[in-house]
Amino acid sequence: MSLGNTPVVFAATKCGDCGPGYPTPQEAMKGPREEIVYLPCIYRNTGTEAPDYLATVDVDPKSPQYSQVIHRLPMPHLKDELHHSGWNTCSSCFGDSTKSRNKLVLPSFISSRIYVVDVGTEPRAPKLHKALCHGECEP
Image 1 (spheres, rainbow, N blue to C red):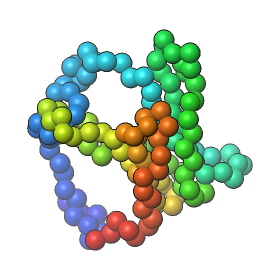
Image 2 (image 1 turned 30 degrees about the horizontal axis):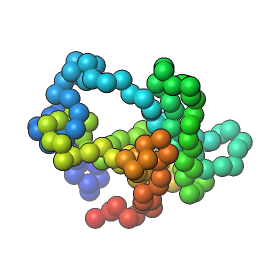
Image 3 (image 1 turned 120 degrees about the vertical axis):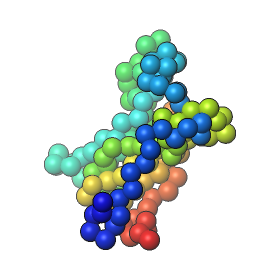
Image 4 (image 1 turned 45 degrees about the horizontal axis):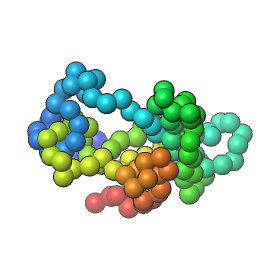
């Protein structure tokens, strides 16, 4: 299968013993509850001229900041429309403690930029690691 001149490669549904995570969704449900979540927040069609941002939300019911945005990381450009995030290491992989999900990848619809956010150094206050602009990822 291809998209124009670009071949499409379908990956296996399981990476094997190559990273963090759980072997099955059932095992993941038995794991520790998340204490924070990351949400891409956009301003498109709101009338607000500000960069999109990554919100860090406290989801620990025992925390005094429960259900509050505890950090905002603004992107360096306007009009990106952040959309769907992903990890630098496959979420279905497990068994290798040398792998870490320490980067969050944020692609954008409108600008075609891809932001890589360091969530490993300070998970409650992530920082921008790298911004890839249109054309930088092409072969």
